Amino acid sequence: MTALDVMGEWAAANPASHQLHQRAARVLPGGITHASRRADPFPVAVARAQGSHKTDLDGHDLIDYVMGHGALLLGHSHPGVVEAVRAVAGRYQHPGACQELEVEWAERVCRLVPSAQRVRFTSSGTEATMLALQVARAFTGRPRVIRFHGHFHGWHDAAKVPDRVAIPTALAESVTVLPPDPEAVATELAAGEVAAVLLEPTGASFGALPLDHGFLATLRDLTAAAGALLIFDEVVSGFRWAPGGVQQLAGVTPDLTALAKVLAGGMPGGALAGRADVMEVLDVGEAGPKVHHPGTHNAHPVSAAAGIATLDLVADGAAQSRADELAAWLREQLDAAFERSGTVGFAYGESSVFRVVLRQPRPAGSPTDWWRDPAAPMLRSPSPELLGPLQAGMLLHGVHLFQGRGLVSSVHTEADVERTAQAFELTLRRLKREGILA
Ligand SMILES: Cc1ncc(COP(=O)(O)O)c(C=O)c1O
Image (cartoon, rainbow, N blue to C red; front, top):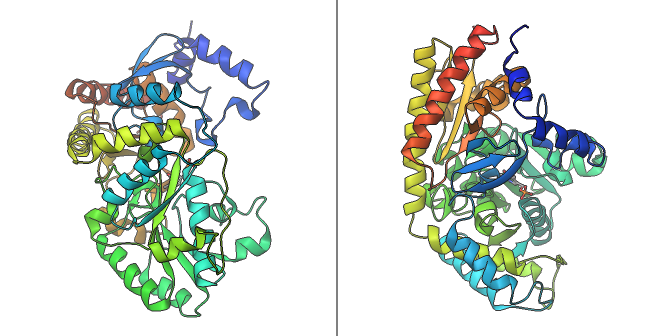
């Protein structure tokens, strides 16, 4: 019998995930419910989760670094969050009316996030960035929007440009996608048609190509001078990079901020927060150009309860510091694993995020210079032919990476980090043996 390769061995060890995927493919396109969950040979399915661990359908214990796509800064099912959700579930499911929880939730956002004078809740991060663009266009009376290459803002039409599949031409043409280069931005702003500059203040894809804070300050000046709004998408970084997000760390206050993930403590929810005069366009009772914003589940009580509990637990910054320290240590350990296994690659990341880049030596300069390389591999790493073996290898050793990267929570442990680094070294050695890595 020939030995199985890494993906074959993982597939053989996960018959329940495989069976579920086959069943799923009969009712769900591609057998999945989120584009990023497509995986070779098939995606892992999870039975339950607690803290920093989850158990897959085949009973394997996994250290989790997907962490609810970044929503779970406090880990899975934090007792304080679960208790808050339980308490509200028996009180009402959907009051169909104004409620105290949405006010309490917004008060916390306003306390923590520097740009937040008013808050409008949505059901997701996608809706938050979509609403941000509507509000900016209504407030400025201008049509155009500037975005940056590789920055992710969800899946509404404007967020998908430059991908133009199924996007109306007129809408696609109203969005200019630029490199994060002040001169390019200034040139585009000069015509006076830009309503807003929208970006992830972490840099593309929560810090794959980080930006320096000076660039954020420059954008602040350029947009203010041009009468355009500055919108930070802090869907991932909000409450994670610091209780007040990147804007708190950088000392740069945008006009509008899109929030989600940690905001709602692992439940569905998002928000647009910002300057009171700008957010006024959502007050349909007043005169002037208005943005009508309904939404059945805006500030859903369960999300509000989880969000309030979470924001209270992260308000002093201790949870973020703990997660950041562990992530920094893990990045060091991953680098050491590259070294020991004799494979080319490097780990990097900011805040509580880590990323690994395989087959590439660490580029020169600081990570905030890397966007200047037009072929920057960091955005596409690991490449698809490496991702399957890397994910499978790590899963075989009990670690679930988020597509070759990860988000650390405040409840991961030193033992988790050690086990992860060991798993990584063993995986690198195996990929080398199988000829996948040189
Ligand atoms: C920076 C950023 N903006 C917006 C979104 C979209 O949020 P959601 O998935 O809640 O629609 C995401 C999701 O990952 C994100 O990372």
